[in-house]
Amino acid sequence: MMLGFAIMGGLITLIAGFSLMNAIHTGNSKIGVSLLLAAALLGTIFAIWKLPYWSNQSETPAAHTAKKAQLNSHADQAFSTSSGQVTQADNEKSVAQQLSKALSKLGTVSFDQSHKTYTLTVTNHDLKQTIAALTKKPSLAKQAKWPRFVENFTKTSGSLEKSLGKGYTLEVRVGQQSPVLVFKDGYVVKNQFE
Image (cartoon, rainbow, N blue to C red; front, side, top):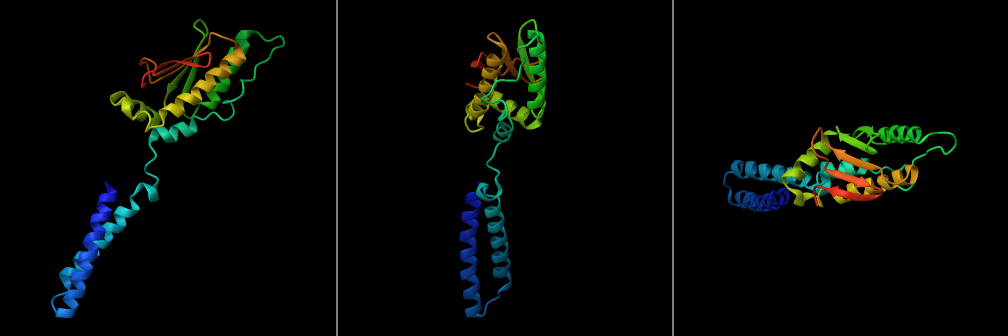
């Protein structure tokens, strides 16, 4: 949209410039043409400044959040667990703490030991907005870089399997709603936006 305004503003600026030169040569009033030229020039500059190339406004909240969600410290390696005299419950608690720390910018992590389920409850405003927008129009998932977000959590789920063994689930949800993403043993079980 801003590109259209920039093009139209450029054309109006060009026409106003020629009109001003014509007014100077013929001795007509230059005030109206000068005001039009100034307004067109300012509008064109503003439209160009608002283009995504200059202002980085093309990045959606999900893209921004997907960058945050790249769990660089955990993406390709398993969570640290102890194999000595530590019980499985202690390892699960340790992994829950590590997940909470790694995902603190996205939300809160809880663990349900009876169902072997780690749940990320989203509190990040941008991610909540993205999920709400995708709920209304799932076709925007690719534009919002949702597949990259899912890929990062798939890696995290794989790390859970390496650290704790098979059977552990990782869910992403907003509030008490049904999970939008469910992962188990490094695989996507549910992706609401696919």
